[in-house]
Amino acid sequence: MVILTDRNALRAWVAQQRSSGHTLGFVPTMGALHAGHLHLVDQSRAHTDRTVVSIFVNPTQFGPGEDFDRYPRIPDQDQRLLRQGGCHALFYPDVATIYPEGFQTTVLVEPLGSDLCGRERPGHFQGVATVVTVLLNLVKADKAFFGLKDYQQFVIIRQLVRDLSMDVAIEGVPTVREEDGLAMSSRNRYLSIEDRRRATAISAGLAAARTAFMAGEREAGRLEAIARRIMVEAGIHRIQYISVRSASTLLPMKTIDSEGVILTAVKVGSTRLIDNMLLM
Image (cartoon, rainbow, N blue to C red):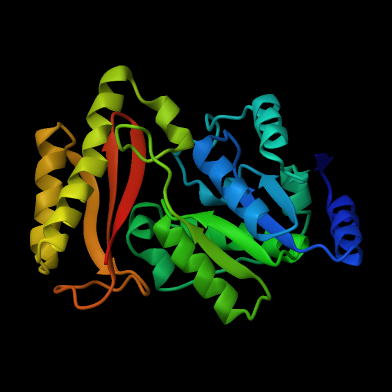
């Protein structure tokens, strides 16, 4: 695995791979890698010839009072995992490489970016869309792989690529879960033992709603209530949203008459966690 830290080195490596006829897969991350990230690498390796992973804790997607400063940074462990996982190139830029002096451009995907998590984290998806645009333009991959745990992010990036006619396929990869159902996340390490136990109610609530859907329930409000009840009974009281949406557009649905998704964001202790499950 080669480690690249600046734009010119990345461009040269990409050009070399292209001249050799290789297809490129890209997995953008913020590091603190876990099995979910490594599954994205596996998917990239399965569908392309060469895999590039980026690690960049993007300051523009964190708001005031959020966890940018304490977001876990464990580069040695990340590099070891990527080598073991068969990654071909790690792009590991600093802030000045991504946002050089004089950088003025931001990317907005609206109204998608102001809904759901965007309501709770103003400016978050502007930061995400901007950094992903920069990274996609640098890597010039054939396919980019995103975990569906961040479902709203996936839909936003897919829309961005479509709107800007970017020549890359955006591939959504199903959520990887712990044995007890909790969606894998770099932020899970913040949880206390008790909060970790309580957090399993997030996936349990969504799964109960999905079970009701499979049994024939189509009213969004009832499905949301099922998920909410299970979370509250487990002691999760700071629920930012539970919402049934169209899986393709993220528009609200009162009655599910096409493929849907139920999404949630909650606070468990001081840790904000998100999850979703498809209804189809």
